Image (tube, rainbow, N blue to C red; front, side):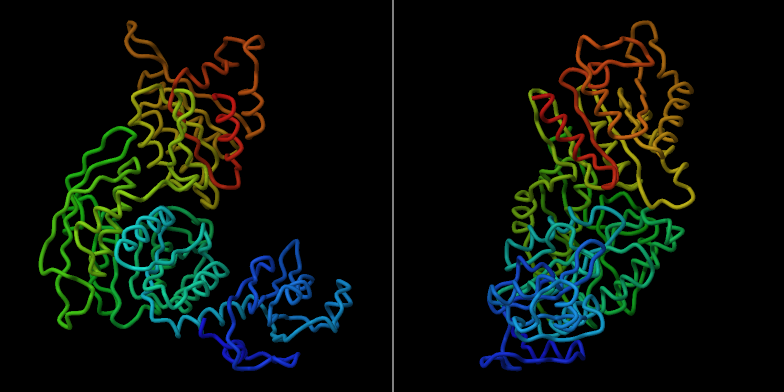
Length: 515
């Protein structure tokens, strides 16, 4: 890692105690982690204190497996008194005031040693999928490391940085926040060479109050951007398109070519049901005066691309990847090839075929922007459509209004079966019912078309119990709709809610039930 025990001690300004004949301040470490199970031989274990588990009690086992340093906020004697771990079995350790702060400081110090380009990625929604697109496309030319899963906070970002090795040429680092100041600290660690913002939506309104507040908090990513850094912004977003210059940098915009104010990096989108989209990307990246690797051509490049993931929002994610790729010198053919290889991420618009049914697994998380995109995706299906929609969290004082908007969106999109689940989703249900009545979708007109069925369940368990009802127990009434009415034969079913609703259980139930 080109990171020594001395480097770590200097970064944290802690008290380094070397134990053992081979202990050396200049000894390089093999890895750094907060999970004792992942610490390699020659690795460093950072003992953090969580709500349920105190990592200090795993220090002795780490040394037994070949770890060479423990970063601790407790002395060996304190840990022995609390957990019974023998102090004399410790190896070298670094005593600090706060191990989580030490993790951030080590990550920042290590970042300064790296030659790899860092792509810092943030936004209200679409971060993880966009990360997959960017990493997949850049992988056509470079050796790329990307954030694992959703390791995008003040623990995940330094851990991602500490996974970068000499062979990596680019790292795509996802950066997520919920309050002011967090992105500033993440940027200080990551020091991105390219900053990407997917959108400014309505997530985390509880703390950030408004979209302007969200824009301000996300814009902290620019605080520690490298001096010759580049910026890629969503040209379809009304807040981002207004950013004409940032710290002397003119942003590059990506999008679907629908914003008349700016030329953006994609246009001519054509959607084809649930099987992906075709798009022509137009990349206008000028050759820098110093002639470095950020671009290979002067002027505009056009290339036809098939985006394998369904929905316009996925094409937008692919456009973001194309924008970054052009800045790092990839050709149109490399971009086309990279986008075509990107696969679905579980819990994010992942299509699952089960015995003639199509499940849209989008249950990892939800906010108003991602739920609108999911509903619009479901609307492309040529079968009967079922939307199982749950609560969206952290929306602040307007959570009732925002949930209501989703109910209206589902009715207007032509979803025939709308299932609202959760305390806040009652507002979704009520708004959907009102919209259906206003538009006449609660009636059958002369045999043309069919009624929209809208149902409400107070929680996930109640929904599962209703879905579990046997054929014999079915009561065919509007008040107690049957399993067959909730889930029509061979239908397309969207499962979408915030992570805390635990809709993965609903997805797994349907996978087994419909098979």
